[in-house]
Image (cartoon, rainbow, N blue to C red; front, side, top):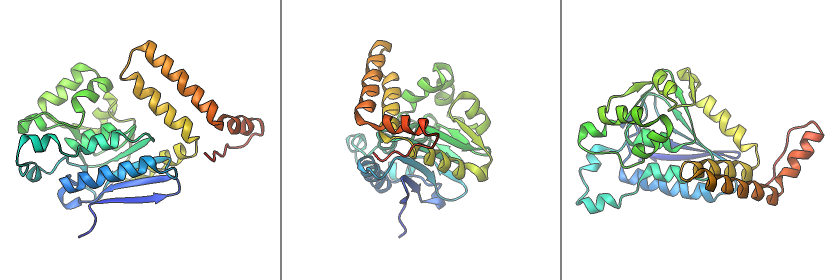
Length: 255
């Protein structure tokens, strides 16, 4: 059987592909375990500086968890201890770009929220239908959505379970780039290549600082930011940035 989660490396960019197109890339427990393992390996791999995640086939990025597989858990405790695949993506310290097309639903939408940047095709649709099935999502939607789009809009999406189109998702701030459908992957890859060209210490420090801002007070966040700034200077990449500026050339970060 063909791998249902694929890893492709191109230079400093790692590309994760959810590869179950006949089932809208719905995630099974085996896929979740594979995704978690890949995310952990990518996080430790100094040869990876940026990550792209996408779905195979034309119909969906990901329709969330496979509902048939959800029915197979023998107990609530077993379900509680499942591999949470959106969290695995969110825990990557490097920048993650999600290329979104077709249906982006449930756990798939939570996986998209776990990325740092989202590029969405104009015909795509974004939704959180869990309440219509009798539960609340467990991959972060109730925590991430209010931080991204505010309480009222988050409640509208989560309580109705109704999907929204790409234009509305962009207006709300759920996605950062809205592009033609055939440009989604190209735009996402271009962003990954751009991030991969910067100092990995600086890029990861930016991500860590912004994540801290979402979880702390302003005073604590400001102190943390200064420590990250100091870490960048201690790593030494700033000297290449300064030399490149002085010599009027692009910086080449070797870290």
